[in-house]
Length: 233
Image (cartoon, rainbow, N blue to C red):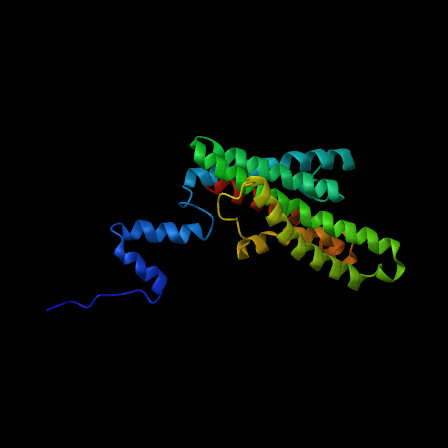
């Protein structure tokens, strides 16, 4: 009597059964969808988290002290007046911190991967807001473009166009000779770029955004980008 063999409904995943180490190959494929050769261990995740949070906190504290003259409470720390400089600096700090934390104790090839992902995340953290800020400046000079609908449109154009431009630039920087497959945008990247949209809304000084205190979320959202770079391998 032959027992019924259970197969996967996914023909691609089912094809892994021909490999001697089926579970390992299957896990490797699924992990590559998230730009990992293998899932980061808990210690790496902790290091990347600590690094990303510290990297975002250092410039945040600096700007809070500079603008407010001191830090009397958490609310005072988080409610700073954001410009393009503040937004990109805090984002860069979180990515540098996440990569630095994630690299501790890692082999050379893994460190290289984290640096590449750090470049990708930084470009996505800086290129879209630069484009959006430029469109805002243009709108200020053209009277009929200086309104809420146009600013919202500029935010959408800058965020989407900036993501693709950032991906192209980061691939050129990381692999100038085009020896490896390009790092592609994913749904996670689009979700992570929520910081660009949120940052643009803060930069646009929309009244409802100011009332919500949405700028307080920016350090946490940018720290997520740093964490992703830190756990990438």
